[in-house]
Length: 208
Image (cartoon, rainbow, N blue to C red; front, side, top):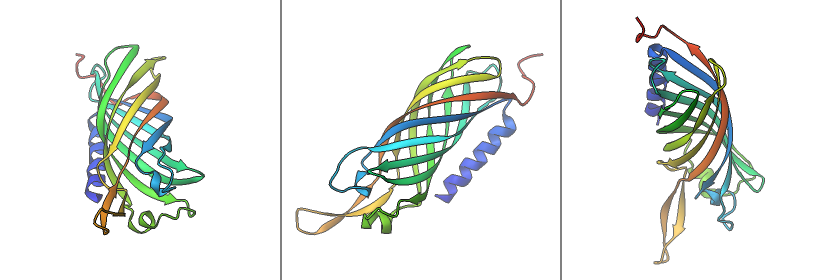
């Protein structure tokens, strides 16, 4: 997992070095995560609240291009019944952004999450003793961005994410009377709103 984090950092640095336009913004949102509710309450198979807030970055190779490389730094809190798990999430992807003053957002990518902390009142033995500090997953997103001025814009987007690697391992009973290992990982949906400010890092090479 450390390799994925190093690769993500290298890709962000490469984008910074090659971009002509960089957008920096703040985003916040709310979502629902499924399939990890047993961390909080084994008898309540419900969805988990997913609160997100953080900084977003978009790197445009040229100002005239209708696509951007994106990277975010997001604090994520998954909670249920007064208990919570806290993550630091770093998504990295590519967005197609057609349009001018009103633009569509269509993107995909991957993310790395780091489990920073969790409520001490969580009593799930399997989670406490067999959880992973890092996870890898993928996402799809779509939304709309509105250019308010030459430098400021606002956006709203919906996101679907799927965790590829395991949050924790769980011992489950089987039909033979024994147990088998279950690999618990989640999937979910979220809606984010935010604003961005545009920095011009260099001269548009398409202009002579």
